[in-house]
Length: 350
Image 1 (cartoon, rainbow, N blue to C red):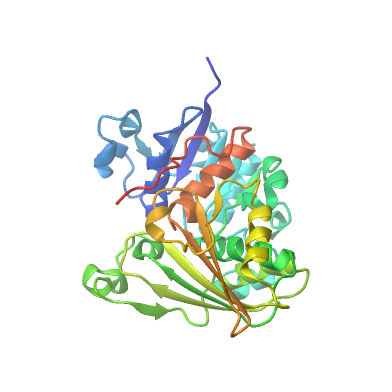
Image 2: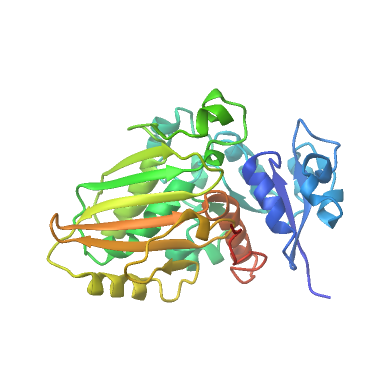
């Protein structure tokens, strides 16, 4: 009988926890054995998520978060807010447990930058140099040997994957990059807020968080590494009247005259051995519905010779590729499994 990897999930009641529970029903080599919530402790998972009724996972009893109890796990997912995650992660690492952190606590390499943008003290900054940014297309080898993964944010995943071939291949200027990103309402979390009530979101479209969105330094950190120089981006976010999905339209300036054939070839080559990114055929543009419920990132390319711009369009599911699905990819890798184990490949259609 094959060894089953024991997994824990701290923070099961949010959208990312819900999505991870959904995904884990598919997994044949990893089993959720601990799920935690202070508010819902004592209930079965199926009590709060009826979609798990008559599935084995639905009978799992929710417990209060306790690092000593979670120490029985091989890997633990932290689906809790920033600041909360850093302390739990440190305790679990001390117990020999591998950690995939879905918060922002270990994504930013520099302690001062994190504290500036998140307005809290980083009390476990000694772990920042060890944490591996969990974007497999860029850091596969490091992820496979890691014990602490900083799972990327949803917007940054879309933006960084869109920009990676262009910046690493010196196809575009490092200045005047505009990331115009739009997300479904689930990106705001499951907590009750007036701004994400149905009547506030439905039949409406608005910008928010300009120009101070907390994902900005994460994007700039990673694209600067790709470019080999400091890069400042104009990152602008909008709320779509849909449940899930991100579409980022990224405006860049071409370094020289370049036709679409050459740029498309460069993108295709960059992602040739990275199957979770699909560079679409020329003339085809991504749509959120074609990645819904999957870990795919679909990329479309447009060259505008009149303005000298390369326009990159990148679509992901914010809950799956942008959070829980990517977390499962990372957990698979640090536990010695295939990256796609337990992950659905066909989108939820229509």
